[in-house]
Length: 130
Image (cartoon, rainbow, N blue to C red; front, top):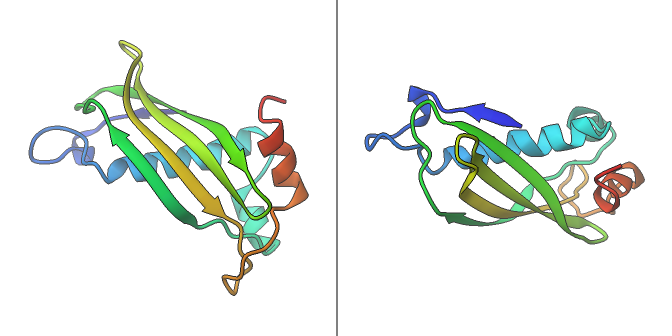
């Protein structure tokens, strides 16, 4: 997924405000699933909700106004009720890694009780390149 950095994305120092990366990564996770035939909206309607329970993030180099970023998403670990993804923000112009995050999500029912990952999601997570 690509993201262009606009003025509204930057802070007083002229660099992307650190919390914005969480939003970029959220969008990229949604598109990662959409590209593989899954809809977060439909999963939600079926009673599967995926809150983020852990983020480990490394800010290596700042993104600047008008940079074009490529946000990548890959699967690191899949459990019975949770999964962890590696997400990276890479500047297109020079292929430089700017930010890297390990994001863990857990599957819960609408009452916030943990539940098994749905089979459709397991297929995607266990075979993301298919």
